[in-house]
Length: 267
Image (tube, rainbow, N blue to C red; front, side, top):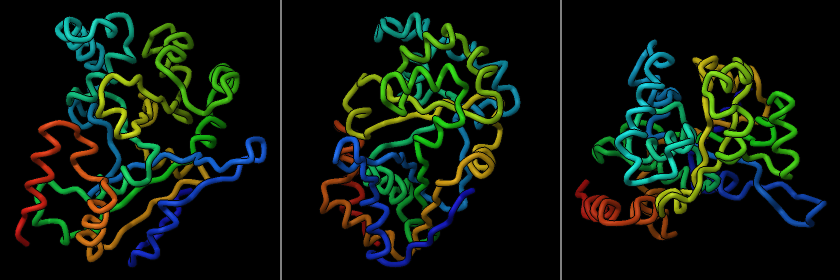
């Protein structure tokens, strides 16, 4: 089930930014959620691999990863023996992969929802932030995967855990997941961008061709926050005041240039 929540005021935005669960075992509050911001509420969730390769993604994916590893290994030797590391590094640099970006930070998710390449479109359409519950995703995993992640007292997988469970095989992962489960992975801190974005990835198996249908059919705690287009500039400016901008999510000159361009944009 996917619950839609429409946000028309700043006050209605507050629950998105503050939702947590009390953990009696820790006597602390923790968030079981990850978020994905999208600049247009009409957009569907697709991986870059499915957009790039259409129906041939299962056939072309091995060649994409093999060629990336072959030419990129000089820059990052650790990717040589792990398809998961190849995916994560490639995703960062625009390689088509089966990974879908998520973040543990609601602010980062909101930042991406409030970001437009064409600033003239900022108030032309609503945007949205997706939220999924990581504990709920674990509930649908095959038993060996559940055991592996529960043994770590976690809901998140690492590349080493996936490599051990799958034998570094994409086909094995697809067989294990079928069409009713997928893993959320926390990437290694390969660079500052991954760190600043609090990055997580959903590793979408080939059996899941419609991600939103999968969430609708298999989850009870998925939320789609739809934010009214009239709020976008106000929220965008508020995020700047909270030090959440392109300068944070894209550290370096790229983010600085994006931030300056938007800061001096004339409406």
